[in-house]
Length: 503
Image 1 (tube, one colour):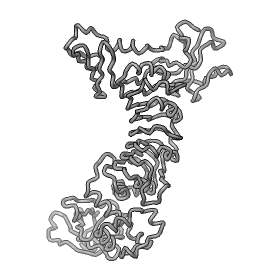
Image 2 (cartoon, helix red, strand yellow):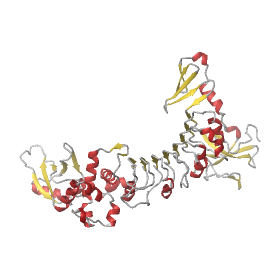
Image 3 (cartoon, rainbow, N blue to C red):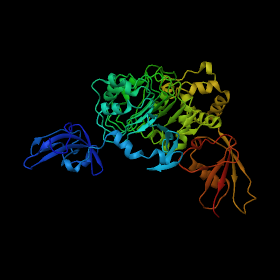
Image 4 (spheres, rainbow, N blue to C red):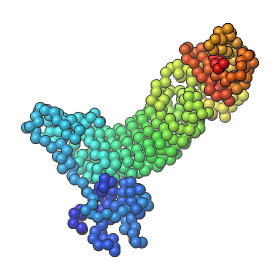
């Protein structure tokens, strides 16, 4: 073995010029002289090849451009845990007793024979004493750890450890995970972001963590989710993984899971096929908080599926195509609220009762004509909408059955025209009187403007319309699309439309 290269170098982690890599080969590379390390970089674009040179395959890589050969003297194999701790927190106890000092931007307060380290970033406390280490939170992110055996050799000394961060490491699974359980007895929170893990590798390690409650696996190589033994989990983050949507049902039996992050996973569908539309699924029975932000969901039936989750109260759904429905995100938000009955928070914003009430009313009015065309009746005992309509709008009948006002508004909207008060608002035109006109809700705004030119005998000028709703006193809503019908803006019977123009 070359001088300065450990005997177990292959598989070890190294750092070179600020970049981390895994050693895959140690030896000569003809025709050059002297030893080389063949490394696979964590960042695929950092290398030059796939481990081959001169037609010879010296090692293999996951990516065709993540391999390189470097001289041993250019890399660092790092230091052991105890050395790192001593370098970071070494001090003279006698000199600093009962004083407060700062080392590496971390405040240390000495009390008696122990010292308390407050890590400001995580707001956790780390208790150190000359006799033993009482560590609650340990951050080993971005180090050169290469195996769980090495990690266990550190954590077995920390009996009170509850929160462990191992992000940006590359850890080989242990040959006998159960033999390392003692090293993670009290571990509740584990973060393994950007560790190039697959789900089978996670499950292989799972027996080591018997009491794990929170698992953060963002930005790994997880695509499918076969079998699952992590029944104690309450929080699971899988964002930025190339997930297969059909595999989600394989973790649906996590009975304690309350929070699931599926953001940026490429999902376009989510389906709980164990029950029909309008029913509650047995899957994810405790799930309260779900994120599907930054995905490819474009169909409303996917949102309908979320209403099957009986415990769901928080949803993040921003930056999905469905949220741009009709080029009107505000309307899309209303429709989403109306379709998922139990939601209390959407994209971190609390849904107020009056907001839900308005959303459900607008939703029912928007699809009222379609409901009537598909078998809906004012006499609900005789109302039998088609299976196609019920599949597309599972909550529609429930909404109007539970609220007589909603049913009345739906019926009025489709049985008569809107009675709208058009009120001219312009300086020096006080003599103009409001005009009340009955118009169909389906009338296009552009045609309404043409009618106003004639009714109000206006000079050739550009009209600007807005309206004041009787339900939202003091709030003026701009009518800003000439190609949309009045229904699109949720204008109701008796609302005031304000007409402005330039003389």
